[in-house]
Image (tube, rainbow, N blue to C red; front, top):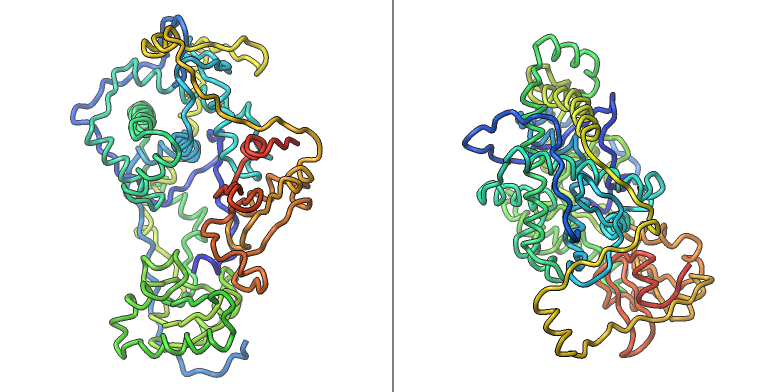
Amino acid sequence: MADDKHQDEDYIEINIPQEGEPLIPDEPLEVKEPEEKKQKPKKKATKKKTPKKPVTPKKKKKAKKPKPKKKAPAKEAPSSNWLWALLLVIGLLIIAAVIYLSLQQTPTETGEEQRVAALVNNQPIYWDEVEQIYDTLPPTVQAQADEEVILEQLIEQELLLQEAEEQGYKVTDEELDDYTASLLDMFGMTEAQLENSLALQGTTREAFDENNKKQLLVSKLINDTVYSEIIVTDEDLEAAYNESGELYEVPEQAIIRHILLAPEGNETAEALEARAADVKGMIADDFNNFCTLVTNYSDDGGSIATCGEYAVAQNGQYVEAFEEAAFDMDVNETAIVETQFGQHIMWKVDHWEATTQTLNEVRDELEAVIVQERGALEVRRYIDELRDDATIEKYPKEGLPPVTAPLTAEEEEAQEEEVQVEVEDTKPVREGNFGKCLAEQGAVLYGVSWAPDVDDQKGLLGGAFDEITYVDCDPTGGEASAACNDITVYPTWIIGEGDDALVLQGKQTINALTRETGCAP
């Protein structure tokens, strides 16, 4: 029940781990090793020739009869895959940011001025890359790390990539396909959704694949250089288990499947209750149609793929009424429970008693954690060695004249023929009170309380949020519900009125809002 959980927002971190910072994976990415093992690479980064012109890449509880209980199953331990550990160490979340960046408009490669942020062995990194990644980060991360931190990450990523290429590492088509499939699984996307996202963002599958190839090259380098050298003994495992045994305590859990019915439009509470009773009445005696009912009726999109199932512990992670009902019900009992999200048709599938996993049960998982902790230190040292041997020049945003990429033959021919090119119409910038300016443009922000991107958008706006019109589209919004009927993405901006109104779906950066409205902070 994704909407019912009280969880901290997931966000992208951008720091390569320092000494003493452990990393714990959720589950490994499957990436195949090359058939022929590479010779162990040397640690010195080879400098490349300077390019002539760099180009951009309560109810009250009632007494119940005793519940049948069983021991909670042990957590499934991740397999030992040092490639996955590596991806975490060099910054899985930075990789996510780079992948996200590949879904954005890629910097123009020809004919446009570009500001060099750094030269790494004469290979350029541009401020446009840094700014685009920074703009994708949530406000909570932007408050902890500025663009300089992101630039440092890109410098170190470029050093690793150069070393991997110098050592002759290659990525096969099969490896790329496997890695891409793992990423799609991680982000819950299909191939069709990926292709659609790329098209909507104006970039190509080739650019996306090129980013992934770079990540795989770096992964192979660090895997061979660092992780293949790490050995974990039985004594190491026993000591780590004794130090953190509480991490392997599994609390008592109620296994629940549910169908969430959220209010529709101006639907009354009585009508919603009647609808829930009707759906509950469709449940077969042996529950063999429950998953079909979840698919056809549930408004909890996050749990449809798992037949509406959640493992509920008494830890306040879920809303009180839902959690209380989960432990108040007997196994195979059904009930309808009301929360602020609507009516939940609940079926209690099982009940597990608290237990503690043994060392043997968590051996593989614990070994992976130890490897990651040790690997983090070694990767840090390895990158420092590459930096010592590299030539790195950094430039402030306004400190270096822009670099103009060379024109293609087609562009030169077009210039010779004096072809008239239509210039994109941008609004003149009005500096001053950003929120007041947006309000004067007729900007209206539509959102819901349960969407993390809405909170991010509010955080980006800061004090300007108080100046604009905000429409709450939560199901309990009452009068506001009618205005939200055509809103399918949260947040959504509607700027202006009538046929000329501008619709912007999703979280918008301040730069994007300035570009579209002419308003500036």
